[in-house]
Length: 114
Length: 115
Image 1: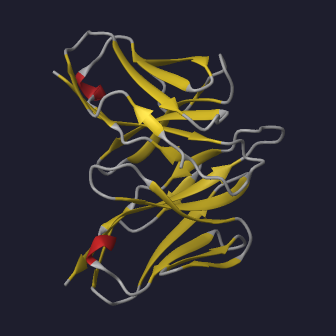
Image 2 (image 1 turned 180 degrees about the vertical axis):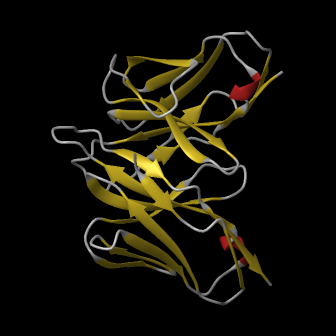
């Protein structure tokens, strides 16, 4: 099976920087996604990495190392509204498949304090 | 914007009932998915579909079936509801993986309670 690990909970203060790590052991890796999910709401897409390196998008950045099976989501200038669950998801594609299903980690609940 | 619409936000049913959860997407996506989300367990895939009338089992298909008669609609069916199927159910859709940077888009979810 596929194994995706991320911390269960993290806390930080407003204005700070926080890094949420995700490690994975999978076969057929075809990209890694980060989603944000506020309580009672749908997950919303944040970022995508398929090649090694850093992808920056405003206050959020995501990093991938395929050789290490490791990714992180970096949130800068934290705001109260960033309190949410952050989901790491790895896409797996089998030979000949056009689907590419996602395997999700259990999510990291981030609490931002004033 | 992609819109994935689930028919109900909250639903209460009784044990043994046949339950239908409906999902419609408006972006002509080939792929559609049904997940359930439980505290401490994360998102788990129940079934998915990559084309009309096509379906594949996910990780936890027992007690569920699906129907995809039209491209935009993907239905999840609980054949005989049981209390352990009380959960949040999330529908998602996406383009095929060859459109590699395209994510799955989720509906708002249906919180289903089985009494």
